[in-house]
Image 1 (cartoon, rainbow over the protein chains, first blue to last red):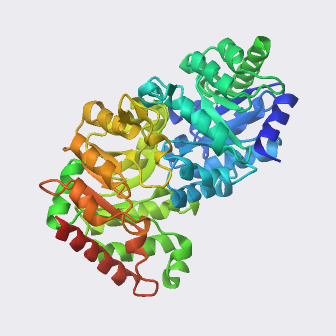
Image 2 (cartoon, chains in turn purple, brown):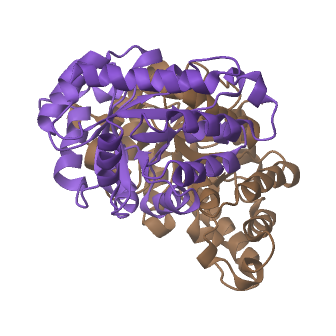
Image 3 (cartoon, each protein chain N blue to C red):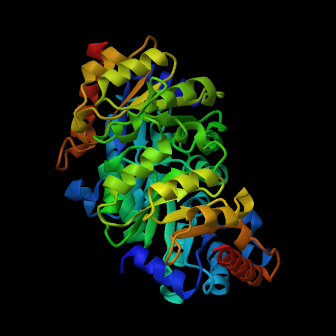
Length: 270
Length: 270
């Protein structure tokens, strides 16, 4: 099944546009898992079991695993989702971007080594840096457009021919890079006006929306400016707000409640 | 020692601006190492031994190791350079770029886990995506500016306020991001006019220059348009042209000769 068909099915089944970011920061893990043999995997397993009925996808951020030399636990996490939350796709957040021969290796890493269903990629180097990912027609390729971070405007807001850089990215993706129908955009919740503008320009593209919760984006504005008919067209990511909702042995239950609450808040705004 | 002091020392000692890209593509390895226990490490070891007197730095491309699940051989390669080619710094080519908390993890990956002396990073997300790297004052941070690949102009050539996007990146790096004196730019040899323009705008910044050899860039043009006084200010990368110069058991000797030849060609143009 193609990635965005799988997302639509999961979103409809769970009535949810919630994407849970699996970013296990060692210093924030509850003690009961921090001292275990596979702390990241054990933490994620409990979070997945507690949240899987309230989400449309999961998004592990590769940097957290790479920084701690725990790539094996990233692989175990993705395998666990596929086995124990069947039908819930996994976006591997890697934001890669490199010349074609190198991008081919990164695509192998994400799709073949880790078995991810989608990846995030960086558009700065142009089409040939993204094509090796796009050529996996059944996988999703989610391209950075307007990111949620404070300095995202340093380059993304530069205006050329009457359009900001991030709008040029959106045009390229919509008109040229989506030749397999498997592309989407990253659009931060922290910039609601830009989100509205991008939705108007790209009514058909799904958006991955980070920045609600800890980063301060408003769910109501995201829905008003970005949601579309059908399954909704948005994968609204929350990482810290869900996975670190509780601090003690009840962390998984707290995460489940936070995911359900975010799902219901989103649905109440539609 | 700071990264660019180390580069200058190595460049002067070896009279070389050559950077050897350690990108071991499994399908291209000579049979005698391909079937060994640690093919990437054994290949690199022989290449390093044969080239270390002709280079100013090495640049392993992380994707090749990640795509084959051989991260351990990347680590062994970097350790081997530090032990057996002392004074020759290592640039880990990763082109990362992510929000601050995530970039911090990637910086730990590059500098603490792998022990690299410098990294490549992507500027698309702005200052806070690059800062966690720049804050390692003794490490080098080499920022994508005008990349060597065919579609690099898709975004990099967009003109805003009379300057192309890649020129805006150069201005930002020169004026704001180089607060620790440890920043440099990636400028492809395949775009010699842009290289000249960037050298004029940034006379003090070192450039990492990919794209000679297999990608078609001219050494003479690179030197004419980019070299400066002193150690020269350029790290001219060749990967395939050096490491796959020979195909059989004599591959290391062939790589050594190719590295020496490239060094001499560069020096003859100065």
